[in-house]
Amino acid sequence: MSTQLSLDDSSILITGGTGSFGTFLVEHLLASYRVRRLIVFSRDEMKQYEMAQRFGTDRYGCMRYFIGDVRDADRMTMAMRGVDYVVHAAALKHVPTAEYNPFECIHTNVLGAENVVNAALKNNVKRVIALSTDKAANPVNLYGASKLASDKIFIAANNIAGNDPTRFSIVRYGNVFGSRGSVVPAFRRLIAGGAESLPVTDTRMTRFCITLEQGVRFVLYCLDEMRGGEIFVPKIPSMRITDLAQAMAPQLPIRIVGIRPGEKLHEIMVTGDDARTTYKLADRYIIEPELSFWSRPETPSGAANPVEDGFSYASNTNAEWLDTAQLAAMLEPGTA
Image (cartoon, rainbow, N blue to C red):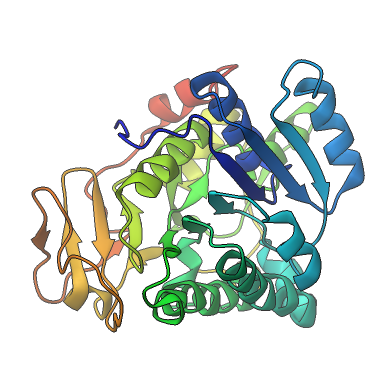
C-alpha cells in the first residue's frame, strides 16, 4: 500500500500525538519524509517530555511540542496556524472509563471534534483525517456513541466548508494490537506478575485486529486518497480472545469474568444499513457520505464496486482469521 501524496515540506499536526498511534506515526513520518513542521498536540506534559527525549528538536528540527487540549477551541485554533494536514487521534477511548465519566467523554470526543473542525476551517487546512473505531458502528456504549457523533461531525464539516479547500474524512478500524490500554499489555502484566490464570470476559468474544504499523500506513494512504466525507475501513483479520490468551500463556487456564459494562461480544465495522453506500476494493471498504453538498467525484477511484444488499463486515463473520501460531508470531519483540 503506497501513497502518491508527498508530505515533504508540509506542516502536519497530530492531536493526541503522544499516544501509541501518534508516537508510531511521528516515527514513520520522520523516517519517510522531510516535513517542514511536525506538531505533537496533547495535554500530557510528561508524555511530551518523554517523547522529546526520543525525537528531540536538536536532532529533528521540524518537531514542535504543543501542550493543549482538543476541548480548548482557542488553543486548537492557535495550534493549526500554517498547518497543511491534521491527523486527529485524540480521544477518551476506554469503554468502562467513558461509561463512568460520560460528560468527560462527550467533551473530548464530541465537542473536541467540533473544535478540530472549526480550527481547520479557520486556518484553511488542506485535509483532516480523523481516527474512529469499530465501536462507532451500531454502538452500545458511550464511547462508541461519542465516536459515531464525532464521525458525523467530520462528515458534515465538508458541507460547512463548501467550496473552501478544507476536506475531512475518517478512518475506522478495530483493536490496535499491543497498543496502550489494550488486552495484550494487560495480559503481559498479569503473566509477569505470576498470575495463575488469565481473565477473559466471554469465550465467544471476537475482535478485529490491526498492528500499529498497518494502522499508520493505512491512515496515510487514506490521507492521499480522500475526497471528503468517506469512512475508510481496512480489510483486516479477526481473532478470538481465547486464542490470544493461549498464544500468550499456553500454560495458564482461562478464568471467565463476565462481559464489562458497554462491551460487545463481537465488533462490526460496516453495518447492513451502511451497505447501501459502501464500496469494496481489494484491501478496504469505503462508506460514502449520504449527503454531499460539496464538489467531489461521485464514486471512489480504482476498481471499486458496490457491496451487495444486506452486506455487513463483522468480527465474528469475517473471512480472515488469526490463529494461535500467527498471534504468537505477532507477539515477538518488535512486532507488538
